[in-house]
Image (cartoon, rainbow, N blue to C red; front, top):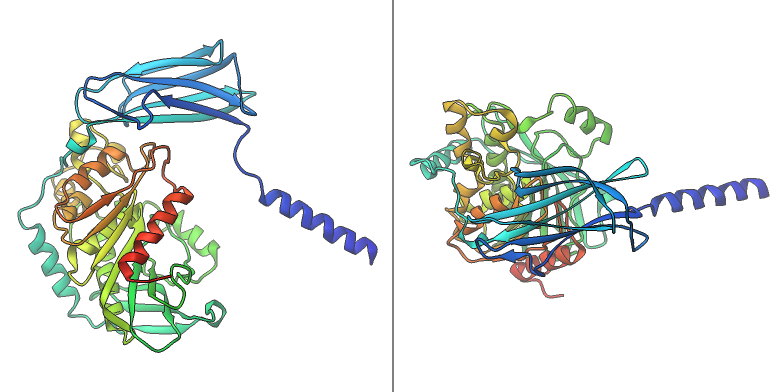
Length: 427
């Protein structure tokens, strides 16, 4: 028995130790010479490149670096030795945008990366993408047609997910004729009453969902949806198989047909999710928000733009922004259709205009909260700023300069606090 106990203790220690692995001992630090990372047009950015080990400069490291506008570096150097552990490089932009210095360092056979991205008059950026003349009419008609199909909702209680304050369900509902169903996790306060609601829309990928019982337990209805028309409570292996198989690169499916494009049913599904929330007897009919990051950031903007029942939205590093910036050799948003998948034919170009976050941004009328990082390589800040600048509705922006396509804790806390304020929830 002692041996068994000892083995269990050892295993517990190993598991605990492995769970705490984080970060790297080697860090590549790229520091702009302005603390706010913001520069005037034609003003030089000076980047200091350093490699650190255990919080000390590491001399003699070999680096490669790229310098230039996001996605379009103009100065590429390889095999530079940091003799004293530091190197200064300079760049400049004459037009609004973002200048990026990206560095790769080779240490003991491993590659480490660092970057910094400086802003040049970002408030002057405007979308390149063209707004179709029938944009609003197209989406109004698409949604009108979809809503002729009854929701036919199905709610299944998930006892293992319920809390002392919320009942949790897997739900599904019809999106449109031949459009399949949307699935999600619904959380409803147990206490009788009327409540505000929050729709959570997902980032790109294929995954299960567990719902939201943490934003405001017992005080808000939350609906977290998937977009692929499949249940969201299956084993992870099922989603992994779909992501690498039938749903691989789903964002490119039918992108030469605006009615059949993959995001058509996704956008319709997000709006039918609003229909579903509004059908719940517990909804108070007042505050209804939508939030998400990346692909979910785009869907937040889109849903708020298309449904007047949405009263606010919060978008973190939104995707699908300003696709046509590619033609100006300016950074376009994920999934970078023309940058990665080749120059479009006429039908492809026409289609993506109906699915550009920048065009939906032009239609917004409700308050929005935004946040992103200057170092985001998935959703470049150039594309997001251009979209943000197209908004005439009330808006707030909270950039976290050093972040890439991820959140800082402070950023998460600030987002959560804003959502609670809009929902009218007092802690």
